[in-house]
Every structure is written in C-alpha cells, then in structure tokens.
Image (tube, rainbow, N blue to C red; front, side, top):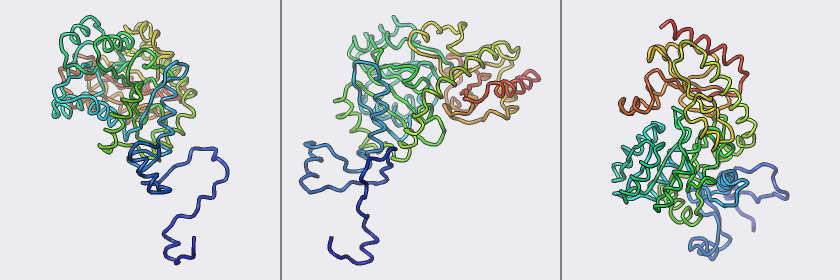
Length: 402
C-alpha cells in the first residue's frame, strides 16, 4: 500500500500477522466481511460460492460453534445434521416455527411445557394464525388419532423431561407418528444436552437447545441452537428465516458457549450424581409430598427415561405438602443455593414456577399438568452434596413451620 495519511492509517485495520493456527477459536468481532473482488461478492451473494458476508448472515466463530453442536447431536450415529445458532433458546423455537408453519397450521404439544414456550405458542404465534393443540403426549394412540384426523397439524413439539415436572414422553414413538403422516417433529433437548440424550438418533427431525443452560454451564451467555437432520431444509428455510428476523447469535456468546462445552461431560456427570442424591434425600423429608426426578424408581416415567437417556440429568422438582406459603418460606431460608430464573449453571439454582416461569399460564392449565403452587424447581449444581443438603434442611424446616 502506498503512503497514506496519518488519519487514514488510524482508520484502517492493520494487516493480519497470523502465521500459525490459534489454539483457541478466535472471536470474530466484525459486523461484515471484505471481498477480495467484486466478482467474489457476486458469487457469494448468488450462491455460487460459500463465504461470509455480514454478521447477521453468519460469522466464523458462530458457525464453528453451531457445527460443533451438530456434531455432538450426531456423535456415534450414521447421520449428519446441520445447526444454526440464534440469539436465545426462545429465538430458536420462534425461528423454527415461523420458518416451517403458516397461518392455519397447528402445533401439537403438551400442557407441561416451559411457561415461555407456552406463551410463545398461545399468544405470539396465535397472532400469526398458528394454533396450538395441547394433549397428553404419553397417550400415543390419542396422539396418532389427532394427527391422522387433522391435516393442519404440521408440527409435533415436545420437551422430555418436561420443565418443570420432569415428565417424560417417548421420543421414538412420537417421531415415528410424525414421520408416518408427513409432519415435522421437534424436541427441546436443553435439560439433557446431547451427552445424555440424542433425539435425532430416535427419529426426531429437530433438536432445540437453550445453550444458555447446560451447554454453556456458567451463566455468562445467552444463545440458542436449532439442529436439523435435513441440511437443505435448514439452509433454505430455517437459516433464511433466522437471517431475515435478525435472530442471529453473536460471536462473543458463541465463543463463551464453546468455552463452556469443553467441560460438558465432566459437569453433567456431577450434575446427575448430585441430583439423584438430593432427590433421594428429599423423598425422605416429611415436608415434601412428592419428588419429580426420572432417576428415582418411583418416578412414573423411570423406565422410559432409562431407555432413551444415558443418565437422568441435573433437574428435579419437589412439591411441598403445605403448598404456596411453605414453598415461599422454604426458598426464603436458602442461603447457599441461589434464587435465580435460569438453570444449568455450575451452582444450584432454585425457582418457584407458579410465581415466575409459569406466572402467566392459566392456573387451571398449570394444575392440570402438575405445576402446583407448592412446586419448587431445582437445577442441581456441582457443589459438594453436604452443603446442598445442609441448605435444604434449613429450608424444609421453615416449610414445616408454615
């Protein structure tokens, strides 16, 4: 480059001096990418060549992490998948639904979904003419009858284990019903991560993650992922919708997600061990009416969970006998655990669904699906179990006093 002014030198980036490959994935903090020639730009925009153009369309950091999540969801399987990262788990759900469904279409789902998902379906998507049908997805004959009778049901969407009741549904059977009738199936796999459960291996078309939770694991980023087994569909419909909605992830949150995934297996093993031990402890407490954890043999879906999960996860919920007041009293006495409206972090997090995540869900629907006023959700961390039990002993003593 010929000599330029001092001001111009300040404005322009220096030459990239990299001579060897970085050991860690770089953060590409750029909103756009330069073309080597206008011809290259034309080829990329027209689809004749691959390349990055604009941060909303893709970014090397984001694409690398999305690819890694797709590899995790298909690890050990004879299938390939494609993935995109969105700005949050809710954005991932919204992008998938709006990319595949149109006004007049219906989503068949369960009543015990995460409250935000229920609101998205019944309020926001309803405004677009996309209806939601709720049923008991454990009743497979009923599910098939509904799908067979109603051509407008285009999507089967489910969580397993469900948030916050930890009820499980049969992924393989539901995916098979959808496939037989030419419908899509999608599962929120946030609770399990691909380490514990691989929905695509069981026939699901899509797996969705709030990577904010266990994949990141440290509570320092927000992002979501959509993993799909049909690469063309992901490219031509799902990714295109994400770009046009502006629901893309950013390089910093993608990088933090990748950093967290480096310890995913170590963390999940400890989450699972602690959750089982805490569930067993809670089962023995007089203030507790019920413990929801699929790793307990008393859980009604234990056999199903054992069949489709490698371990039982770090999430549990329990119901206090004395209801709402007891739940509040219990939570107010906890000092070691954190009261926070999220899950999947390395430390233990407590939530009262009736007053937070499911506050805007009709009470009748909540109660019908086991989300009672006395239900407490626990995202069990990786701390020493003795510290967790000591804290819950204080909380449960306060609950009994109520």
